[in-house]
Length: 296
Image 1 (cartoon, helix red, strand yellow):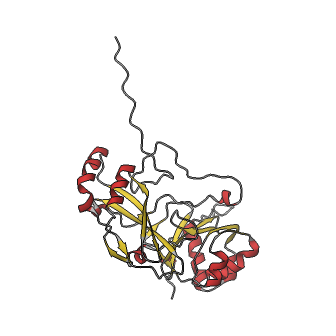
Image 2: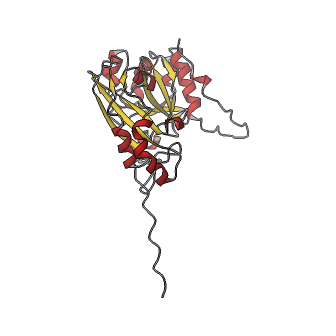
Image 3: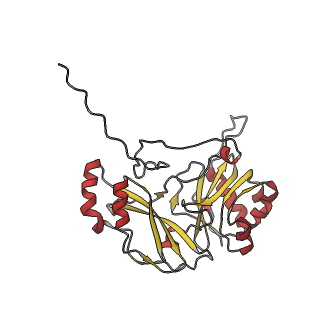
């Protein structure tokens, strides 16, 4: 039986003082989507879709659905019914992590896949994996990914303390962190890269600490490669209970409609603070300018 997302998503009622209803929060629409999928009601689900739906590739247990929607596609209204039919075959669950996009919610489905769904005014307009790798590469949930681990751990305190203690002191922080993209091929060989980090130097230290990570081959999907994201913090005890993913590639609904709307892009000179925000491209805050020369 599919777990209902409603237990995790608070629904606020709109005030009757407004002649026009307030736009629905993404969490409200996620609940509606979950109910339609749980009821296998493709017709109701199709009605919750925006005129354009950007699908950045999805893996389905149904091979026919993967063939049709496994790569990036812009779905027009004529394809909504077919996409809805595929979605209603999934067993949805809640995620242990949170999207960094204000428009999106994370959901999971068996056998251990995680995606972001984005909404605008009560309609689904985007579905895609949560990592920055090629769109056709399935993204595993954190528990599914960790179940494949043979050696190593995300607690790397002992391996990074000597190098990161000075960095923590230099930046005046109680913790530093890095998000890693980890991709496994069909033999279990891992490719690990830094997605975002407190600084590039700190990211490099965390990356070096994963040299003992090994994994079993994945059999979760039929894809040749699967990916996930791992958050490493130092000290490990400061890791958040609910992880906020790095800045995602979720577009604004205006971009999907071809209106050229850009949302949420953080410019140069912004340094990532764990648990506060995630810039689109990591840059380190430049040092302050030197003091002016003394007057004669």
